[in-house]
Structures are given as C-alpha cells and as structure tokens.
Length: 220
Ligand code: 5RP
Image 1: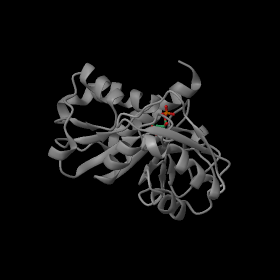
Image 2: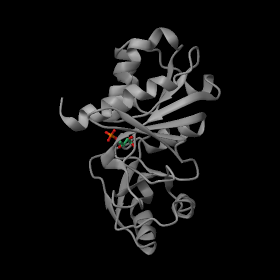
Image 3: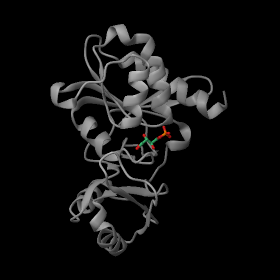
Image 4: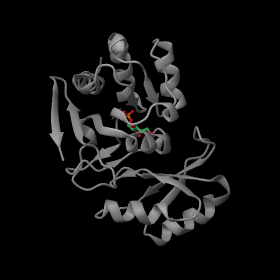
C-alpha cells in the first residue's frame, strides 16, 4: 500500500475507537471513508446500521453486509465519520471533491459528533487552495457562476458530473477564505445554490490525521 493510502487507513482505523455500540452512525464519502467502511465491516455486529451520504457509500456498505438506514428513520446519529478536501486549525472544512457535499452536510448536521478522517495533505492554515465545490440546480448554473465571480471567485463547471440529487457542481478557484462562516452564509443565499462545500457553521468536532506510522487527533 502506498504511504498516502496507509495514512488514510490509519486515520480510518482510529475513528473506530469512537463508535457507539448499539447506535446507528453516519458514514461519509470518498477514498478515506472507503477504508473506514471496509474496517467497519469487522465491527458490524456492534452497530444496527449506518446512514450513508452517497449512492457510492451505500453500495459499499451493502456489499459488506452493513445495513443502510434511511436518515428519516434514524433520529439523531451518535457520530458521523467523513473525509475532507481541506481542514483548517478550527476544523472548518472544504468538502465536496466527490460531489456528495449536500448529503454530507445533512448527515453531519444530524449527528452529535462529526469525526473527520484525513491524511496530512488536507491540513491548511487558510481554506481555499482546493477549489470550493458548490452544488447548483441545473437551470441556475450560469447565473450562480456570475454571482460567484462577483464574490471574487473563478467558478468552473465540473462537466460530466451529476450529483446523486440530479444537480451540477461548480468548483470555485481563487478564493482565500478568511471568513468561512460568512462565505458559507453568503453562497448559500444565492438562488439556485443547493449547498456550498464549506463546513464552517458546523465544523468537525475531531480531526484524525493519519500517517504512515499511526494517527494523531486534533480538537478545534
Ligand atoms: C466527497 C468529500 C470527501 O470527503 C473529500 O473529497 C475527501 O475525499 P478523499 O477521502 O477521497 O480524499 O467531501 O464529497
């Protein structure tokens, strides 16, 4: 296994320490979470099931025999485990590299604790080097892009990608995000925006950074 995958797997393994036996948990999306799902399969007798944040994670969970629970029937979840594209020292995140940002934000919001798992390449001082994903209703794509330009960004349509919700993604380059909470609010208010991939109003509660040797835990 290459060093970056080993780091992701170590972060994923450390997240298992936070499982609450007997309770449904939330599961995110991406290559780091895939390691978590694979490891979760070894603990499936401890949990009744998982709420999934994407069709891809749902398929992986089911393939490993982990029951997938509808969020509407789950109530508040004990923990939500997900990756990130960037994490700042306050555990505010950019997410959505895998286009699952809307469902990820819903499941994070419905969980008592959000545990973010990543390798060290995701840690930044200021968010914005990774292009900020924005999910938009298809008819609003050009209008939202023009509004994002007014905010100082350079939006690029992620052509060929349709989200699990049937929408499109704009990736906004050129932003140095000094006020993540403010920008999250502002972008979410543009008509046609479904979700912006900034997780600042609801940051992670814990960040587990894996390395080739193990994992380190950060609090906000
Ligand atoms: C998907 C996400 C992922 O959590 C993010 O892209 C990180 O993915 P990976 O673990 O593959 O680096 O937000 O929408």
